[in-house]
Image: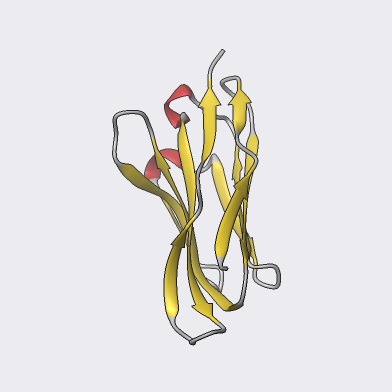
Length: 121
């Protein structure tokens, strides 16, 4: 069974740092674009950052200079280093990945279960 498993969320004070990780497991031929989304209470899900298989990135303006996305293609993993966290960064963070499956060669979109990030003093 193919799935994305996230880790690294938690409670942090304003100005602090956290690193989120997401690993794709199962019968995967290749991971394509990988992204982090977030959803704050009472709001819709929004794209935070995305990285292509070849390292091209796009950032939400409000996190530029504070968050850094990276990936390891050999391990089918994506990480999000978050620095100088602000209370408005509080949300459930979701990993998203386009995966080519070994079983049928199809490119399929997957979501992780989400991990809570709370920024509060």
